Image (tube, rainbow, N blue to C red):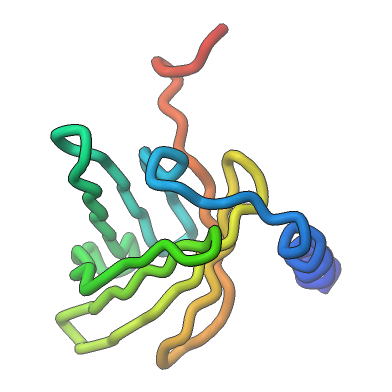
Amino acid sequence: MKKVILLLLCLAFFGANAQKITKKFLVGKWASESTEIVFSIENKKDFKVVSFSTLTGNNLKVTGYQFDKGNFYLETLHESNNWEALAKFIMVDDNTLVADYVCNSPGQVIYKRVVNNDEQDF
């Protein structure tokens, strides 16, 4: 319960002081308890999004995305069960995003940036 209250307080604080989510910021791999999302920019302009369910082992079909007022919206489809989801991503810090999902099982999911140890500065 403490974690839920803390998360809500963080969302309220960061919502008021939110930084804008940009394509460049998102580039890399992000993971939650059930999903991994990889964002990339190819040919210096083409933004690519690949979403993968770690629970089912299936890719999620990205049906659309949008940047709006500093937030990022992602629409996905889990084709095996025809489950559509819309997520609004909010930046908490440089390595944390919270996605507010509207779907058959709505709720919030925390994503953490996955950092490869070979890429870290020591």
